[in-house]
Length: 196
Image 1 (cartoon, rainbow, N blue to C red):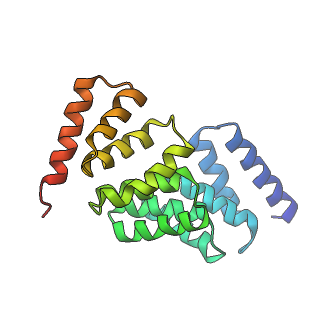
Image 2: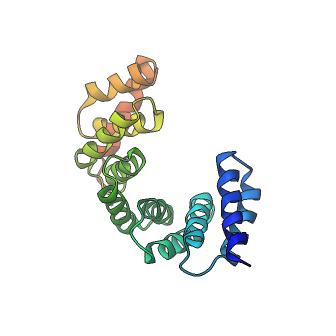
């Protein structure tokens, strides 16, 4: 396929993504772009990165392979982010942590990378106090995002900061006092239960 046609296809894919076309349509377009783009071209890297983000929840191993292909061309924070998600889903928590840490190193204020890293450190590594610095950065950037607020409350409760956890759940997430107290107690109990 001539270079101009590949560039036009990449432009069409960008347009489709910006318009929120259905996943099945995007998958077909991205696969076609990957099949026709030249090795090492920006269009190929773009298509592989977009495809990896699109399939990571359903096909984490394949998404990781695509992200690694992109990373062979250079350090790309989004590729490290996808790699972190893929490794988390596959249960490779050390590899996920390394990928998220690299993404944070490249984009220190990115709330998604900070949230994912903080939540992983809290849950998979049982280090809620260490997680709090990452979750605080994510919350400052996206104070209204419920998933981030919930992750921060989880780490706070597990780190023994019950009052702060309750405040987030009640004030920021709109939970009743009884719901918040019950949840925080459950989280604290899980933190005190030895892991095997």
